[in-house]
Image (cartoon, rainbow, N blue to C red; front, side):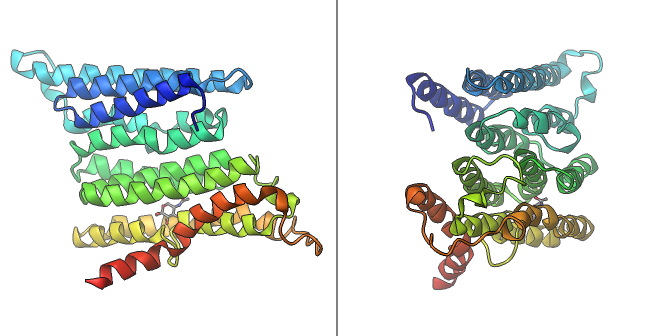
Length: 340
Ligand SMILES: *[C@@H]1O[C@H](CO)[C@@H](O)[C@H](O)[C@H]1NC(C)=O
C-alpha cells in the first residue's frame, strides 16, 4: 500500500478520478474523470527496480488513451447528430460501450490484459483487476440493454476467461483470465441492476485481494513455485479455499453472487446463456485446482518438528482474516437474511 507522499497523492487523485466519472452527469465529465484516473495510475505503475513495469505501463497507457479518445470521439459525434453531421445517426449505444469494454478488458478487447499484468507488481495487478474496472463498469451500466451485441460480448468474456487460463503456468495470467471471466459475469449482473453488480463486485474484489495478498506474501509468481517449500500448511489451505471461493463453489462466499446472477438470468428467461455460463464455470474449475494440486501433492513434505513457523505469524494473520470472510461469508449472509 502507498508509503511515499507521491504514491499517497496519486492514489487520492486516482480515487478522485473514479468518483468524478461515476458522479458526472454528462459524458464529457465522465471522460474527464477517466482521464484523471489514468494519469494518476501511470506513474504508480512504473518502478525503478523492475524494468518490465515500464513496458507494462507503456502498453497500458496506449490502450487506455486509445479507449478514452474513442469514447470522446463517439460521444461528440452523438451530440452532433442534430446538426446533421454525416454518419452520426449510426452511433449506437453499444458503440459507445465498446471503448468502455476495452478499458475494463472484456473479451473481444482483452488482448492487452495478460501481457500488461505480467509486468506489474502484485499491488498494481490488484488495482488493475478491481479498482480500475469500477468507473468503466458504472459508465457501461448507463448503456446496458440485453441486445445481441451485449450478450455476445458477455458470452465471449466467459468463454475466453474460462478457456484462456487452461494452459497457463503464471499465477498473474491465471488471475487475469479469471478477471476476464468475472468481467463477463459482472456485465451480466449489470443487466440485473446495479445493486446486484455491487454485490458481485464487492465479493470479487475481496476474493481477488485475498489471493493476491497470499501470492505477494510468499512471493510466488508461478504455479510450480507453490508457496509450500516453506512448510507452511495453513497458508496452503487458505489459498486453496480462496481459490475455490473465486471459482464459485457452494460453501464459500463466492457462490453467493453467482447464485444471484443465475437467479436473475432465469427470471429474465435467459436460460440458454445461463446454461452456457454455468457449464463454462464447471469445466474450468480445473485450473484453479491445478494451482493447488502441486502444493498439496508433489511438493508436500511434512516436517514433524515444525508445527507453526514462528517467523511468518503476522503475515499469516492477514491471510487468515481475509480468507475467513470467504469461508464464513455465505453462512453469515444466510443468517442475516433469515433473522427478520
Ligand atoms: C467464472 O466465474 C464464475 C462465477 O463466479 C465461476 O463459477 C467460475 O469458476 C469462473 N471461472 C473462472 C475460470 O474463473
